[in-house]
Length: 340
Ligand code: SF4
Image (cartoon, rainbow, N blue to C red; front, side):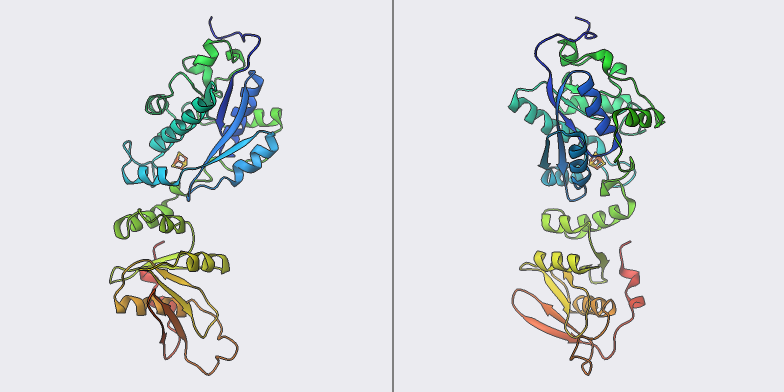
């Protein structure tokens, strides 16, 4: 069988990785047109939320499985066999690991394929022919890994060869031009999709600075600190302590919830202002600097505290005390320690 005709009877079933971006949505549309039954799968990490995938799955009317990938991506960041992209994004290894997990789920269900929305040569590093081959090989899924948007430029997969998927309905997209995808979006009625680069914090250079700083100081073993990376302002003080400073009520709450033995939590005692977390041992001069940061980023005095000096409450597992300042410190004193 040459894979160009579809065998009547059983339909191929598989997972298609859905980020919520246009290509991943189109992959599902193309697969359905080629005769496959598709369910969507998204991997959630502290660096990538499944919100866009949820919206897309709703719009496409496709069941969605959300799989927690936090421990996997943290392990990969520690030792990425194929290195990082332009920021702290270990895309080749991350992608291969996702496909490997998807492949395990596919086998558990006795299904036929895993699909992605990749387009040959769309991204210079991670979607050239060699990278697609590396991912197929290191995921252990070669032959069952389907890229419906560029399948006609690649070797036929098992479900195509078995006649379960009509190869003639798969596409031959290549390169960075997006016009063909926009035309397909029109045809399939896909209207809601984020920009192609959006979504994963690991591709952002500024976020990479925070991640590198955490790796060098506290390490990545404490997942609650990894999960806090995407929020709040961050500082690294002269004595080596880190400060995570909330920017709004939700972030302050997240920092309060992350407080644990061994950490220091700081909150304004006499002002309205942010919470801050110092995750780990800190010298007294770093704790005073952290308190200064909280005071400097605080606003008005609390009702009934107008005649008191600016003061910050410092909590550890063993004690709660206050550090008071003769006047509110200036933010400029601390801007040099901020990680941007
Ligand atoms: S962009 Fe992020 S989620 Fe996507 S493959 Fe790269 S590291 Fe993984």
